Length: 625
Image (cartoon, rainbow, N blue to C red; front, side, top):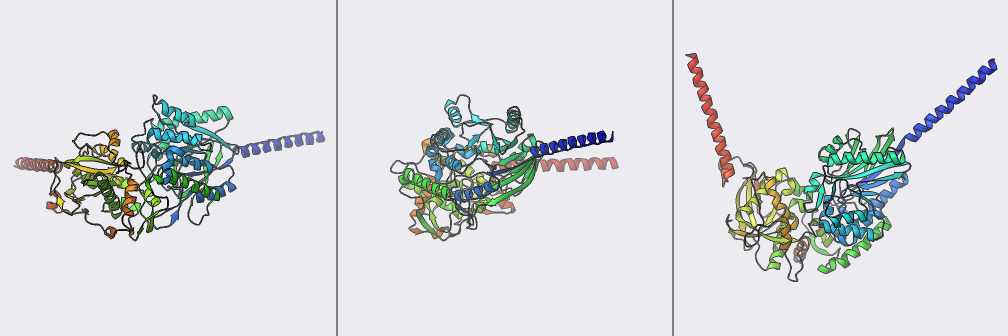
């Protein structure tokens, strides 16, 4: 009997051990470690750039080296990008014809990317051509995901381009037994920055939740697995908040949001509920790495790092060779038309110009922006044979500064690479004197709430008092003619204005941004108002009939300096004077009706308060009697 009892006990012990092992194995199988590598806002920066201190950073050949190092350590890592992979260097000139951005990302092993607003800079037909060029190249290219920013139902050409490339709302990728569901979201501000996209936008949070639910259900039904859900969002985060913060707060089930658009460097993830928001700044400055443990369908953070890509990292030879091949493509098919080469030196620069950050930081006269606006004015005058009244550019289109030492064609293009339809063509339109003054008021009043709206002009001088009433800060303005003489601006007269297409098409938005108090209406020489889509008919042509580009205007202007940067740009020349004063005379000098209305309302309110006070005091005296 004792023997039987021992046998039974032993049997149950074996069963318990086996069961324990099964539970242990099951738990082990349920617990997975995953690694996601990410970038955002690469902006065609195939080659290294220089930071505010002149130090090199980025470059896809160096980025590839670090990606390969991470893949050795994490063989099943996923590599994704948060959009704006194009527009920012000479390589973008082959965007519609050769799709160099997607092809080099494919060569680097990117799994998935999404659209940013700058993918629409070449207009819908340019994007469609790029998608076809990428597919027809035969090269490996990444998936593109886009859940809420899609062609209109009747835009058959764009719908076909999306279908032929394989643009989807989400994709599912398996790595090392783990399933990743990756989807794309386009934000409100990105949409505002793509006014000519031709796309239809669905509300991001609702569409994101719908897509997450659909992707998770698909993975459960098809693979019996809970996926790691990654959102590639071109919406952005600023100061720990922003559209991606709201996205994470409003949507259940997202594990990681790769946040593009605002070029934000997130040294630590922003954690909202169970979602990690990450960002790797821009231009390939960093490779982002996030390591997670997935257990019971929940992700927990193991490690997070932004790995610097700088000159301490060696080039990957394969990608370096590919970039050199692409440079030849750009030279043969684009730069040859302008008689310049990729690395041609235009001028030796001894002036330490503003960095892009400094251009944005304060309201001031920037000598860097003076170079740009003066170049637009001079080249437009040479092309048209007449004096231009004013040329202007905006902080938002200045992408890089001009370096010390040799300034090359590539440097200039990188600094002025934005454009709508093509690389920043210059347009010539007309403004009434009143609207011209309104443009100066935009610089004075709108910049504090929208720093990329700071304007820089050639052909005018003006001053504004930052202590004055909003939308009435400018207290002096005049045209500054080429001979140095000054001329009063007549409200009813038409004046010729030169600017880039991108800025030109944004002028119509001034009315909304100023709550209807300021308006700038581009016109033809007869004074007829122009719609934004009509501005393409007012592109400046050179004497050979070629459109004048912003970058080429600057390059030509610098090249005409015969080797050395003009000394006049060593310091401001007084064309924009910014000051602060509470002197009553200066607060109302040249005031407009808005200021007088506010003063009148204030006086009425003040008089009413005094009257009410007097009546109350009088009534109390009567009661006391």
